[in-house]
Amino acid sequence: MSAVPRWALLSAAGAPLFLIGGWTLAQAAQPDEFDPVRQTISALAAADADQRWIMTVGLAGLGICHLATALGLVVAAPAGRGLLALGGLATLVLVAFPQHPGGGSTTHVVAAGVAFVALAVWPALAVPHRAAPTVPSRAAPTVPSRAAPPLGRARRDPPDGSALRVRWAALAVTAVLLGLLGWFAVEFFTDGAWIGLTERLVAAAEAVVPLAAVLAALASGRRPG
Image 1 (spheres, rainbow, N blue to C red):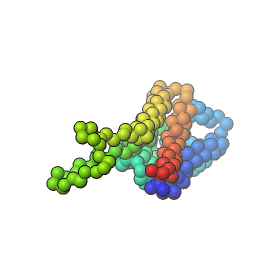
Image 2: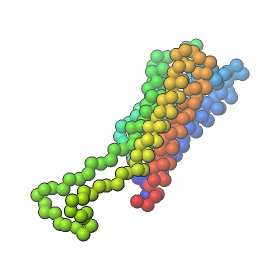
Image 3: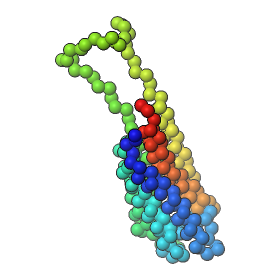
Image 4: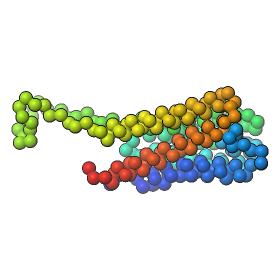
């Protein structure tokens, strides 16, 4: 049985639901000239946006879900869980400081940057390190075992291939997220034509990763051994 509580699956699944469902409904409430490829998610919750409460609820739900998932994903390393929680907290901060009419808010932009970076990096730091082997005390007498290796041969533990695969997978996920984030940053700072599209790609990917992590932890807990 996995140590991850079942409610963590609900919070992890709620993150992409709040985000993608929020921007889908909020975009439908905007005037015809709204361009989701060019305009950001923050524009849907800006102080002058039509029905801004829809995206505001979506972003607030996203932040709360990330905080809850970080609390429930107990099998992850503390550093990874801390960054996931930081991403959720920063999301709530940017909700509290929405984009100003016709322009950005410094607090909003900084909070969004912190959230994006934290949610991109946390998978690489979420894989726990293996515990160091216990060294027996020299004072305690050792009893020879029948399973002991022959004299002159050292016993070697087999390499943990599954742990190595998980670590490489986490690094690969972080690399992909940072690549998407870099693409969005280029569009943002150069006022590119795909600001909205690239932001939605990286935000959706970052919202789905915690769900994949919880599903993997639950599946691992059901396997014998």
